Length: 38
Image (cartoon, rainbow, N blue to C red; front, side, top):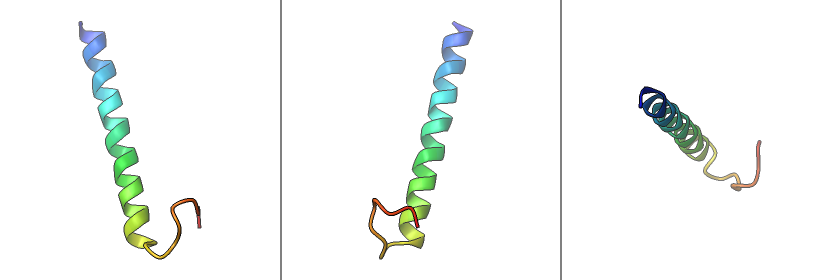
């Protein structure tokens, strides 16, 4: 049970990190296209 909870917590943190990264990119470079990594 404990291992399952830890896995879910890790997945949630990873998703939050990716979402934050995505939103920060969009805010900073709104003029840049989504496919661009500039």
